[in-house]
Structures are given as structure tokens and as C-alpha cells.
Length: 147
Image (tube, rainbow, N blue to C red):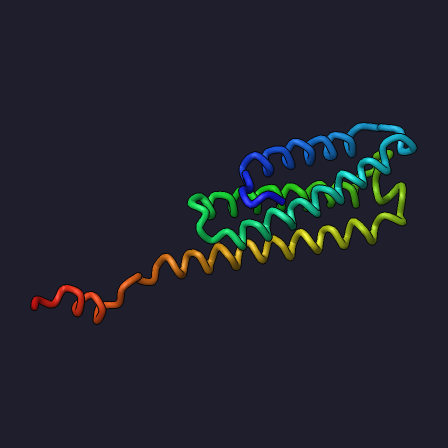
């Protein structure tokens, strides 16, 4: 992945792809045509969310880091909703119709929930470090001491 990651655009594109998968689950497509591709899309979304989270965790100097954490957690929640829809839906492409996929979807849900917890932990850590003063009162007194 490039050193410069455009988090906002990448998350936007994932959001569109996720909505496409959601539409496929609602419609009645032919599973012989769309099941494999839908599962590939779900895997791609999961992998990309992991890569984006890793990039965001590493990039502590990013100015809009908290905003991107918010965007990432929002799409993670949407991802869990789509996976839940895959598990509980009764459409042509669903775990009810293809029970062999249930374990994989459950794994992906757990993976997404773990990433959400990681995001929450990182946001809490960022909030705590921003509260701490950069210079202690003793250091400030020493710096301002007249000579």
C-alpha cells in the first residue's frame, strides 16, 4: 500500500461496495452467477477494512485521525449489519440457503467486532493523550524563570 493513504476516499468506495452487497442480499439474484462474487466482495471489504485500520493506527500524525476513526467505525457497523442480513435473510444468497457459509460469515462478524473494539481503544487512547499537558508545570516554571 502507498505511504499516503486517502482514508476518506477509500472508506467512501468501501461504503458503495458494501451497499451493493446489501442490495444483492435483498434482491433475488441467481446464486450460480452472484454467490461467488458476493463472497469475494465480502472478503475484499473485510481485508480492506483491516488494512485501513492498520494504516490509521500507524499514522499517528494524521490531522483528521479521529474523524477517520469515526468513519471507519461507522462502516464497520454497517458491515456487521450486512453480515447479519446475510445470516438471517431468506433471499437466494443467504446463509439460510447455503448453510456452509454460516461459519465464514460468523468469523467475519467477529473479526469486524474486534476491529471496532480496536478503534474504540485507539480513540480512547488519543483522547487521553490529548488531555495530558505537553509541558509539566515544573518545566513551565523553569522555562519562564527570569535570569
